[in-house]
Image 1 (cartoon, each protein chain N blue to C red):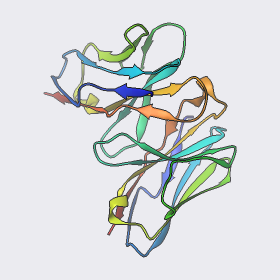
Image 2 (cartoon, rainbow over the protein chains, first blue to last red):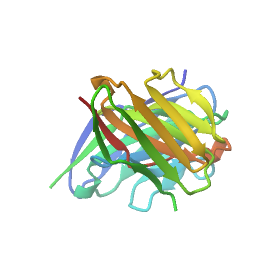
Image 3 (spheres, chains in turn red, cyan):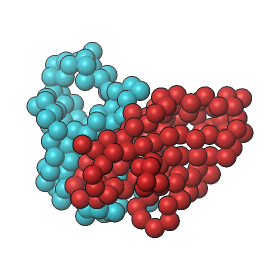
Length: 114
Length: 115
């Protein structure tokens, strides 16, 4: 069965420090990978996605994620976080066999402290 | 433009009320979704419409009734809800052609409270 594991439920970090949010997936078929961010009392916003090509993908606000097929991982990183990055981050996959189901991880709460 | 809009932002209803949630997108997407999200949890899929036809119903109780009047609109009709149905209801859309086109774009959600 397919699954997505986000190992850390909460990640506290000081402002301007680097951060890594971990995501591992399990699937018997190829997948497309996504990171969504949810700010308090808001919907989910697409942060970045890996569909094919370069395994390193970047977002416009400084986050990047690297697809590692051998380790079945898609960790999210940022070299220097801001207070405004405080949010819930969800890793998700869609199977490339088609269909409409997105499998979400449980989420990681990033808390940036001053 | 990757905007999905939802109304209302907040809704409080009694267990005997009938209300509706509305979702709209103008991206030409042909798949639209309803999700339910409880606090500190990921979204749970409820329904998927593809080309205005119900494609997936994740065994949702009949007190939730989806409707897709046209390719841009998606409604969720609510009747005789229970307090445990209180949650954030999220709408999403995608191109709906399968594969790489199925990146989902989410609306801001409706915060529903059932008294």
